[in-house]
Each structure stands twice: as C-alpha cells, then as structure tokens.
Length: 334
Image (tube, rainbow, N blue to C red; front, side, top):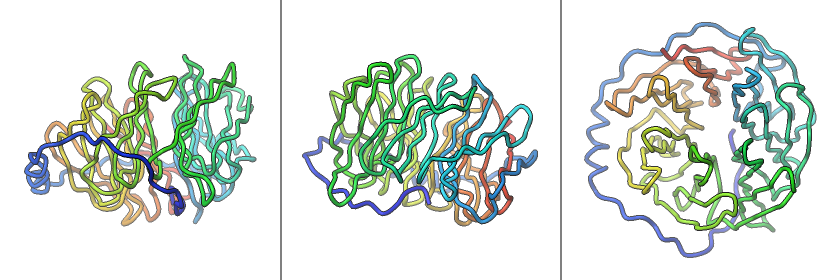
C-alpha cells in the first residue's frame, strides 16, 4: 500500500487552531447528499508487469507531457507518453519507490528502500542527482523555479520523522523534526509555504519555505490525515483521511469548512481546477469518489481492487493505475 508501518515517535507541544462545531452540522448534511453520475472511461494504457503488482504515487509533467508512476513492487519508474496514449519506458534502479512529483520538466522520486531522493530530467529520462535523506522518504515536493527538493521522511526505530529540504544547486540542506508520521504534502502557489499531512495526531503541518521556519499545526477533525491537494484560486486544502472522510480546510487560516464521507480509506486526492472537482482513489472496494465542494454532490466510478493510485492530467483526464486492468484506466473529467 501507500506506506509501511511507522515506528516514529510523537514529540513537542502542538498549537492547534481552534475550530467551530459547525463543521459537524455540515458533515451531517453532506452525508445526506445524493451520489450522482460516474466518470466516463475513455480507454486503457498497458504497463508491462502491472497485473497483480503494486504502484504508488504518480505525477504528470506538463512540459514533457509525460506521466511518471512509482512501480513500487518492481523498484522502478514507469513513464507514459500522454499524447500518444502509450507506455514509453521502464526506468529501473529506484529501491522501494514511494512516489514521483513533477514541476517544469523536473522529476523528484522518493526511494524508501535506499533512504534517498532521485532528481530526473523529464525529457531525457536521465537521473541528474541522488540525495540521501532520512529513513523511508514518503511525501515529496519539487519547486523548479526555486530549485528546491523536499521530502517528508517516516523514520524508523532509531530515527524520528523529519521534513528535509535540499537546494538543488548548492546542495544546502535543512531538516526539522516532525510531531508524527508524515504523509503527503503540497505547496502554495507562490511556493512560500509547504503543507504536510501528519497521521497522528491528525493535522496539517505548515512551514515557511525555504528555511522550514514559522511552523504551525492545524488540527484535522478526522483521524488519519493522509492525502492532500490544494485549490490555489479559492485557498482550499483537501485532506483525504483514513476514517473515510474528505476534509476541506482554508489554506490561509486552517479553518475547517466541510467534512464529506467517502466510500473507504483513501490515498492521495487530486483537485481539478478546470472542473472544480476533487477525485479520491479508494483501493477497497475499488473506486474513485468524486466530490464537488461547491455543492457537496458526490459521484462514484468503479475501477478495480487495489486501484488506489491516481494522477490528474489537465484539463480533463484522470489516470487510475489499476493492476486488475494491467495498467491504467483513463477517465474523462469533463
């Protein structure tokens, strides 16, 4: 699955942002929303060795028009040519690969098996650099214009969880301890702040970039904050939680605006700015739950068992990595 069992320890004193009881009333109303139509399947893309295998976080790079998928069970990175609709390459040598993130032709890959992150060129597919990290790097962010590579490391029995930042040009390194097991992370539009989900205590940790300073903790009302995405235009965070809920939170203040039920424990959500919809993959029972945060309406699209990984390809395609389909289900979000 997306992560392994953590052995990190909690530490420090948390300054949680207070939140109103009103979200519980919104949550009750959300549970009464009708589930509406599903997304349309428009095709499939085969991936070698995908049947019965295991994948993790994937990313679309707009510059190269390629999708990069962590093939965890094979210790490799799968590359898809989106415009051609076909598998392009299998890149070996990524031990325990946990995920890929992309920005302006640059790819960052987290390798849990070797406590490292790899920096790739999306066009040539060459690995430009390899940086050591803390134990079991998981969530990650790359900011091309600032030359920043960030990894949230789960840690192990002898090492606490950490958030680590490397400046790609100077190799300057910054690290801070975390109050619990880290999961996924995103930045704001200006790349001035990073938002990181912590599983327990369930929260979003916010830190200033590039020094990882001015740390604050925003309490998430649902247990097990896991996946995370952001709507830059409306200033909203969408947090998919282990208790089968999707939480909407202000990215400015941390105020909780809504909590919606979803069909099961989720992975990383994707917000589509073109449609305003949030898509959450759920490996069991095997579906994508789509929430319209403007109305609370929800829809479900059947996928396949263990299809817990998705990637948004703007403006209107959602890739679902499905071992049962031997590769990718391509859904239309339009």
